[in-house]
Image (cartoon, rainbow, N blue to C red; front, side, top):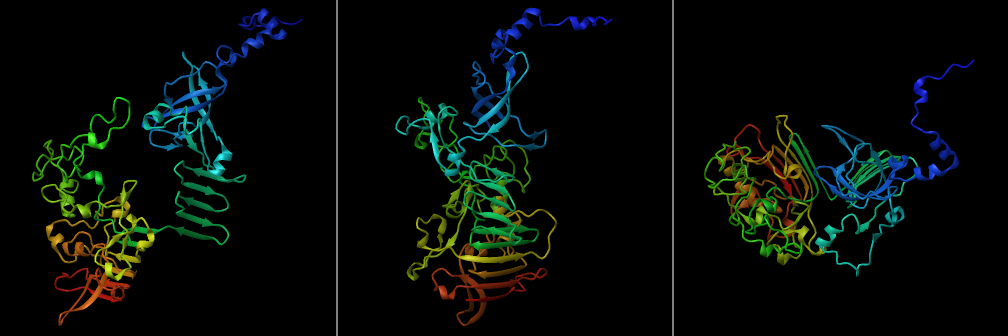
Length: 480
């Protein structure tokens, strides 16, 4: 004789009529409603419409699987791994397609579970796709902002892969490919390749800068950037951060209508913490006393960027004509025409590269000792803090900015940016000289205005690490 089932088994929430409906199929039809039935929390496909890059929040438009959900409310972005101090992930872009699930709460909340590649074939061809003809919509900045994530123009990108290959690719053009070898490359084909075939490591770039404790290597095209700072550090007279940046139609205002800056043209414009009403005062306008090593009015004056009044000393040297992505640079070239050897040229500003070729070098600079701190140079951090003079005595010294040992093959170009004597030759091709009139005075002079055959093609210099260079001159050898 069978025992009676426990009482809790009989207290089912499913009625007999519902069971009969399920068997007949009528109830199943209603349950497929993605908004009201049991499928309300099924997966869906959505398109990313906007991304808050500061808060890591996303807005989406559901395009499949949820007929009633069209929400612009931002929600947190999901990542493969993240926490208070670690993060693994990638920021999506408007137009990306994702798979979403639903969090159970008083109101349904979406969460992104994965992303789906779209238009892979167009990515192989690097083809642009858009939702309309170019003649249909004027995609000015205002319209582009309004239609972001809904209508737009996209150029898809996809690298060809084989099964088992790992690809990491940014929309800006940089890739990391892990197959039988390793390839790290940017959009301009500068690359580091660990090749499997012959077990070689290959570096390809226009320049290489190696910054180590007490040692530096400059190789490739001659580039001299230590005397340049970003343009935004000095006022040009325009109020770029005016409170009103767009007109009534949402179009950007011309810079001529932004008004005049409160800061005089040519003056240093540091962060508000460091601003001084009077550059001769030893403290900021807020009354806070600032250590000279972090006070821009102090260390930029030691580097001969600004004067004691806070104004740029030499605007032609403080700001480079060539700047890309916030990085100013100067590639040293000379006009091959012997009649035009009076001035150096910045090859990065020449419209035609054939106008003047950039000089090349392999330069090694070595200090006699190092204190164990991480090196900071103009190429690693934008400012050569390691060789910044500590006081006016070093600025006026003849060679305090020079390392203990220098060895150069190729074009010899001045690389002492801060002492007054070195500054005169910084970025200029040099020529060795032995005589000054009838007197013997070995030195390196500017090669501007002299024949190329007299320019230095090698240079080896050793400076005493213990003796005063004013009493014990350095030893150098050079060939033309």
